Amino acid sequence: MEGYKYWFPEQNLVTVWSAPNYYYRCENIASILCLDHNLNQTWKTFKEVPVCAKSINPIDILPYFL
Image (tube, rainbow, N blue to C red):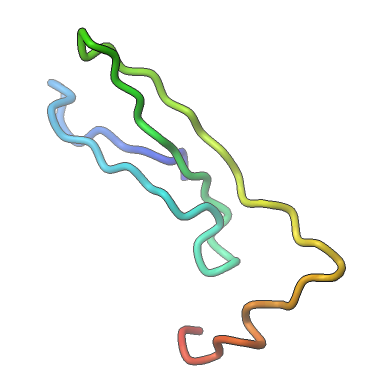
């Protein structure tokens, strides 16, 4: 749910999630891992884009995936 997850105490493996609110029902956030020249890590996290009143509901377009 937090956009990324470290799997070991050494933090040598991480999963980065890039699909906020997956399938429009998971309510997770997404993240980007930023590394500088010294491999120092910073995270940018973000939520899904708000649904616009004029937008088409993707569930109506892509029922195959749901």
